[in-house]
Amino acid sequence: MLFKLAWRNLWRNRSRSLITMASVFFAVLLAILIASLQDGVYANLIKNAVNFYTGYIQIHKKGYWDERVLDNTITKDEKTFGELKNNPDIKFISSRLESFVLASNGDKTKGCFISGIDPEKEAVMISLKDKLIEGKYFSKNDKAILIAEGLAKKLQIRLQDTLVLIGQGYHGATAAGKYPVKGILKFASFEVNDAFLFLPLNEAQILFNADNIVTSYVIIPESTETLDELKAKLGAFLGNDYEVQTWKDLLPGLDEHIRMCTADGYIFIAVLYVLVSFGIFGTLLMMMAERGKEFGMLVTIGMKRKQLGLVVLTESILITVMGSVMGAALGIPLTYYFRFNPIQLTGKLGKAYETLGFESNLASSTNGDIVVTQTTIILVIALVLSFYPLIKILGLRPEQALKK
Image 1 (cartoon, one colour):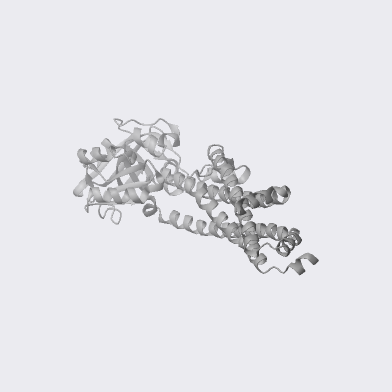
Image 2 (image 1 turned 60 degrees about the vertical axis):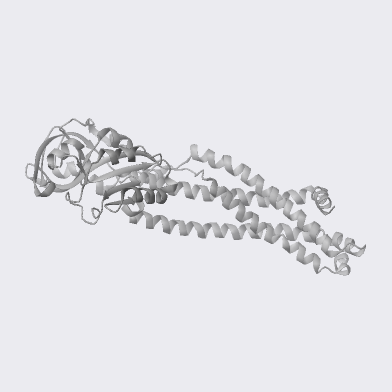
């Protein structure tokens, strides 16, 4: 009976009900869009950063990351590597052999970082082929080198010039070789652009006298939202002789930056919640002011305050739930729209993003948890505020209400 009365009261004054419902609707919609855009921007930042070179997860021999020398390497076990490739949580895996060498061209010499890679896999893993600005990309059987643009300028080397490499190989062996420059790469990361060389993995193993040796496995997971779980699983599978590191371990500065930005985002969302609360509370005050005489009359003719309060509370709950559901119903397709049709950054800001190697757009996240979380928070806020009319009605004085 009380529910039926509350439902009829909603539509007795459609304008008032729709205004209250709209305040909840827009609150849920804004909260979902802001949170999804924030999450999407951070996910895109991470994707762009790991695509510079690191990947999402790396596997090394224990102690390698603290002392990156060739003696701390992995003997490539095809059985273990095969099991990693067949892991359903792993989308892509590649092997690398990395070290430091002196690169020389004429009287120009510079210390640099060299990475022996699988060319086909790294073309997918970090889009290495797309970073080529001069020359041609190499194949796994080429005895040639790719050099970063900044390093090429410092060594004053051009395509087809011969680069001499000298370093220390596996177990103290001398590493020395001469390679023609087949291509020049441009990286957005200044550190990578000024110091990186790439050889096919087989050729790097010959250079360092490290047959069947790699320094790391680089992994792209099926889902980037379960990295910590995958890290734990891989650690348990590989044992104590290996260390598994996510991008958070490899790029601690980026992780700290995102943590700080996330904290700022929480403050912004909290401000939104405060504004939303005032908006919803304002509509409830309006409703109480408009219906004061109605409530006084109902109490005067014998309706109990508790019954009247329950009717008004039920009205508020119905309005809140309907507004929340409609906000979530529109928020979900909008997050998908902005996921596949991101907001494009133009002008100086867009150019700045592109210069740093980041995509100049703002794409939203389609993580369902965001919709559930934001809808629930606004719903709870609105429901808590809905008790205000109940409290006012329980303390209502009919004679005063009828005079207004």
